[in-house]
Image (cartoon, rainbow over all chains, first blue to last red; front, side, top):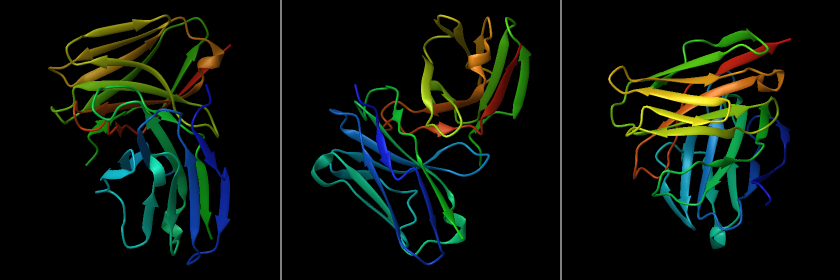
Length: 115
Length: 113
């Protein structure tokens, strides 16, 4: 079974430039998450999707971040414009249920460096 | 406000010995707890979980203990192996909360030969 796939693995951009990350969850997983992990910290949730609906985006900085999950499968997270403080690892995860307790499966992440 | 705390940033043990990783939480609403392991340049991988209705869950060399009154859980690895060297994250969630995980800051485990 293929795991959660993210691309790119690494991205270096100048501040004020836009950047986008892509995620393909595990087949059949309706719930998709985007987490951000700062250096030396644990991952923090940015947004959660149930199918194509964003059901929890309370932690997403909406002035510069946006996300979409068209057709309830793949998802894209965008930052525009990027700031130095956005440098982090962006992790996508998926789970089979957003209502029952079950583990989430994580992708390898995209390491973003803003210079 | 750090709701899940891992106060030991690092731990070093000898191969074959027991590794004990600790985690404390402050939110009494948390009722499901998970441990994830993370190797460099990889995403976290699920290791073991425990529901608040239990005080122990075991899976091979890994055992998680939960002390609800103390709001404390621990992960025991025995015997420890060099391949266990990784960062271990404790995470907590609330049933019905969409599996939103609140993570600790992680503990770097090093198993030495």
